[in-house]
Image 1: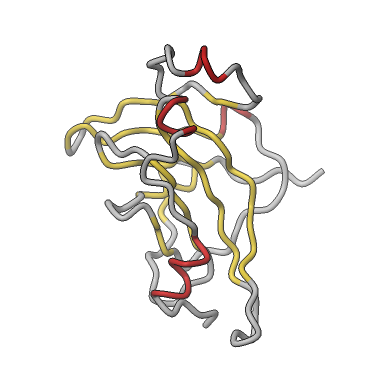
Image 2: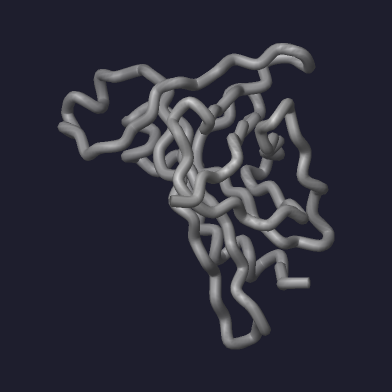
Amino acid sequence: MQQREAEHYILPANYVGAFYVVFDQASGEPLQYQGSARQYQIPANGVLLTQAKISEGAIAADKLRFFRQDAPEQLTEITARWLISIDTEQAYQDNTTYIFGGRPGVYSSSELKCDIHFRGFHIGTKSQILDEVNHFDIDSFIQQNKLNCD
């Protein structure tokens, strides 16, 4: 099975909600590395456009890391992952910040000559995720910003 490169996602301090990396964007950021890990610096709007191609395959849990940028040189790692469904009542009493999601996605449209690949996540407490705080749909973002495949 193909292994994907290590990935580090760096989010703005106190960011809550959906966040995405959209791949193969000529006007996007060049791919950055921190050591051997791809480094994705998520902007305040929650969508990073990158020139990089999506990294396919399986990834070990310890190679997929998430951070909040609390100060220019200070990162706080978010280690809690929400991988399974939970008791809703219990969720509203849990104040831990979680990362949810991470599957690759594809946006297709008859107006585009190719598919746009992205990876999407949510960050927040279970109640923020259930209440869809700052949740937005990447399809709408792609349409509004007229993203294309270059």
